[in-house]
Image 1: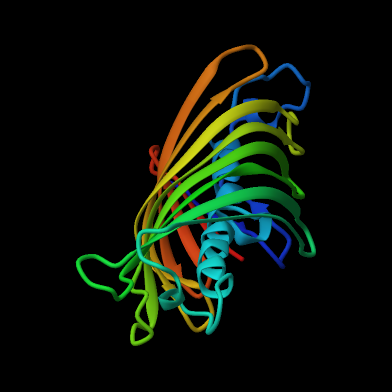
Image 2: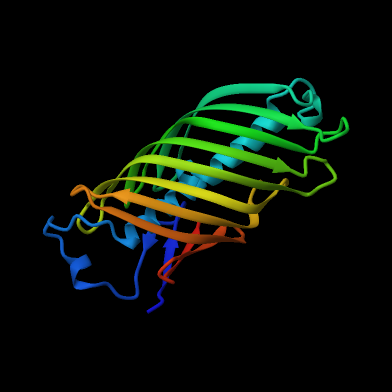
Length: 247
């Protein structure tokens, strides 16, 4: 049966509540080593959330880098077309419920098409990241390829397409308190990010989760994340179960 689940991230206490749970999931005898859909959804949501330094935060960091890490007027126009630039930095954050840190390296090129006016920016990201939340923690390697369009000041929003990958280990703090490794990959379709406040106004993300439990069994989950504006999104897993995200 399809279930709609409130899944709140960020300044509010993060919750992931099912309308019903199986008896197996409710047990806490330490013998269950499977990775549940709920745990996969939790890991996916945290890998997206700006509160945990996830995909949204790192996409915004690419935008900040493009806007601010240049010579004169904080504009993409200050870069030379087709020249590769690079930077590295450490970043950390803390909200009421989540702390995160990351050590990242960027390289990027401004694309001017056939002219001299910048039309897009292509970023590559590598590094490591970690977060510690009320329900789950993670240590992972992070990589991304990010294309940012609509650089012209006349445009009110950026359009972003990217692939974003986190591969590492997670530890759950709820129910059986499972520990597992996973690779989470996001492929976005036309994320619209407002220039006024850097919020994601709309867009779709295909999310793939492949995890290995402590007994060696592999679990494959996937879902689609749709941004609905006002810092909210809905994650629909392959099962049809939905999770509401907010931060």
